[in-house]
Image (cartoon, rainbow, N blue to C red; front, side):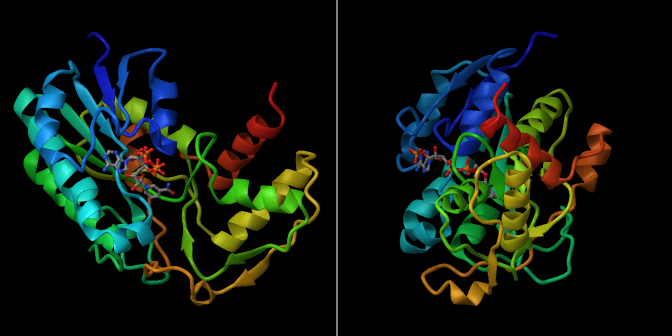
Length: 292
Ligand SMILES: NC(=O)c1ccc[n+]([C@@H]2O[C@H](COP(=O)([O-])OP(=O)(O)OC[C@H]3O[C@@H](n4cnc5c(N)ncnc54)[C@H](OP(=O)(O)O)[C@@H]3O)[C@@H](O)[C@H]2O)c1
């Protein structure tokens, strides 16, 4: 069977860049940014897609900052609900497959729950609500579509929590991180490898794509700095003062407390053992700071 032709949206974003790098060597990949397809112009999407040959459409694009979503709800709905819905309708009409990325923020954050794909969603902010509405719109428009929920991404294409912690620790700044909010940190490199495997299988519906284990922002930061010391990165401190989420009074949107997702369905589907986030983090930091 010939390799599928792939169109990747949001290719300037953290996950979008990683997907292009992973898939371009072995597939015919077209990478679009907001300049080629803008969810703010939903009426143009169908004709733009009609001008591109593809078998699989990967959509990591969306309005991803919870505070920005709260401030601009109409734009959030266009990017996270209406745009993905039009993508799914177009894919359905031309017999293409849509893989649409979503988030652990569709869950309420109730503590001590390992969230499964079929668990009840109950987002606490507009970002989560629009992402959930987008999931439903996508699945309703295209029964072949896959909604891939990811959480707490890190990787080489966009600075995230570990990069920020190391940058501050290199300067010897005082470090604080929230200790009462948990999820599963997840490597964009691993997500890309899972996606490449999932494209060869007929996965549809909702699937959780996350590394194994769980962390708080605080334990993620401490593990990052411990690994940094092991790798010989000259951080001036590995101590992080724990704080509570409630202390971050500058946040406009509410944040869910605990959104650790189960990756059991993904492990069974791909018949693999998914590595712990700390192993993926060690790999990432090693590549970034000790390139061969
Ligand atoms: N990062 C995480 O920790 C995390 C956690 C859970 C779920 N997710 C989900 O994973 C996916 C990828 O996340 P990410 O971190 O890679 O996001 P990202 O870096 O913010 O990238 C999102 C991309 O979407 C584009 N975009 C935003 N609004 C748009 C619009 N109106 N029209 C067209 N394109 C638009 C942005 O374009 P510009 O570059 O022009 O702004 C950007 O390239 C998203 O679905 C997100 O909800 C991410």
